[in-house]
Image (tube, rainbow, N blue to C red; front, top):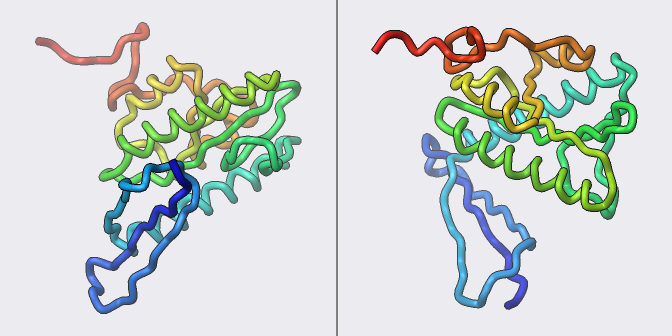
Length: 189
């Protein structure tokens, strides 16, 4: 095995004459024969980056209003998007931009990432709670119940204050229907 650079090429679909942007990440152990290459719509990529950064900034700006301090990565910690202490608990946030097209994939990634970060921190003796942070309420609201059932806090800007105040986020919707008695309204068969 050897360290190898992965490259991503970004091109605007609607502006084919626009210069290509290449991103290089030297972060993977791969075999000599491995190569990963794909093309991404530049405008979609940049929209996602902007939404991600705005969401991080909104949450980081909200934390001090609730007596909490946003934390950044230390040299030996996992590369989390944002973290803060709430008493003895370290809240670890994974921030994702989401669209109707990429929501499923992005939320799956977020779940895996934040679960892994907390596992690493717990292994080091840190009391940790995972938080998935998105730019807006999800299209598929069944994610709300999924994250709740997995013990992962799930928030977006419109509910930051309620969450940080420790208010109940109930009742929340499940699959677009209000949950009653813990079961979604599926309708008659």
